[in-house]
Image 1: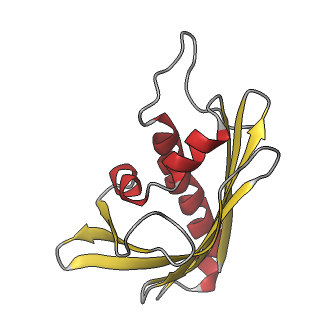
Image 2 (image 1 turned 90 degrees about the vertical axis):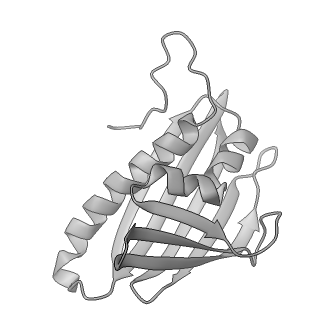
Image 3 (image 1 turned 30 degrees about the vertical axis):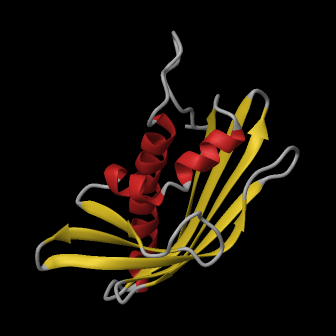
Length: 160
């Protein structure tokens, strides 16, 4: 399995960051050739199921996921949402954590996945691709609906 992590620090409050990162249909707007469909009625909680469909025509695949842990951030407490991926093509899990950081928030998105038909020797390349793709998606979700303050270049990634 390929393992990767994306970290960001943003000036928005944890509740707003959580709302943006757990807006499942919005993920489809951030990942090329993908649309996301929520299969269970809201609000989000443990047991929420959704599917990301990626590709064009016959070259598409479904990435079904279920929220197995749901704990929104609260004063002094990190929010955590764990997803289990159970598709025929993509399997694994993701953990989204949101905590307060000064006047803003810190996001840690950790994911472990395997892609059917891709040998383990390619796990490092898959991790790099995942870090890039999910980093862009997280950046887009965090920017969505947010007006940049003067001189604010948007989300910042520590150590990058």
